Amino acid sequence: GAGVSQTPSNKVTEKGKYVELRCDPISGHTALYWYRQSLGQGPEFLIYFQGTGAADDSGLPNDRFFAVRPEGSVSTLKIQRTERGDSAVYLCASSLTGQGISPLHFGNGTRLTVT
Amino acid sequence: KNEVEQSPQNLTAQEGEFITINCSYSVGISALHWLQQHPGGGIVSLFMLSSGKKKHGRLIATINIQEKHSSLHITASHPRDSAVYICAVDGNTDKLIFGTGTRLQVFP
Image 1 (cartoon, rainbow over the protein chains, first blue to last red):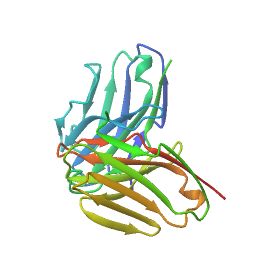
Image 2 (tube, chains in turn red, yellow):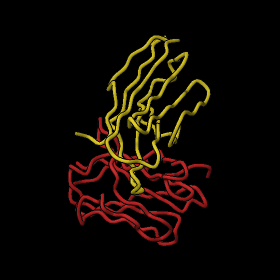
Image 3 (cartoon, rainbow over the protein chains, first blue to last red):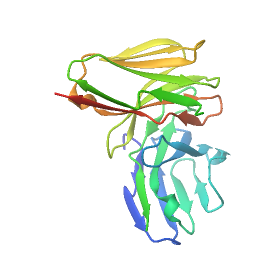
C-alpha cells in the first residue's frame, strides 16, 4: 500500500488477555517506531527499530510489552497480561532512514481498550 | 516541566483568520516536526525543519534555533483546518519528544 497500515484499527480485550498489534510500514523504510497515545496527551515513544533490530526500546513501560520486526518490514507489538491502564491508541510510524533525516509517516493507529 | 511546550492548548477562530501556534523546547535538537491529527484519524507530517522557514500552501513553519522556538502559521484558515496540531522534536536520540498538542477549531 501507499502508506503505513496498522491492524486491527480497534481492539477490545479483557484484562489479563494477550494482544498483538500489527504494523505494515511503507515499503523500503528501514526505520520503524511505535508510540502510545493516551486521551488528551501527545504520543509517547515506545520502541524504535532500524532494520530487524530494536535500536532503542527504552520506552517500553515494562516486560509485559515486547515488539518484533523479524524481516525488517512488518512489526508486531505484543502485550501480555493486559491491564486497564494499557488502554490507548498505539501508533506506528516509519521513515526511510531515521527521523532526524527523513520525514515520519504515521499509520492511523490501533485503539486498544482493555475492559 | 515538559521538554516540549505548546501554546495555546486550545484555539478557536473564524474562517479566514490568520492563526499562530507556538512551540518551545528545552533540549538540543536535530529537527523539529509539525504534525496534524484529525479526530479519530492518524497523524500527518506537515513539516520537518532544522532551520529557517518552510511554506506549503497556506501553512508556514518557522524555527529559531537560538531561542529554541518554532511557530506554525495558517493563513486564510478554513473549517477543514480544524485538528490537533502537534510539535515534536528529535533530540538526537531517534525518539521524538512530543508536545501535548494544540486543538484548533475553525468556524465558518
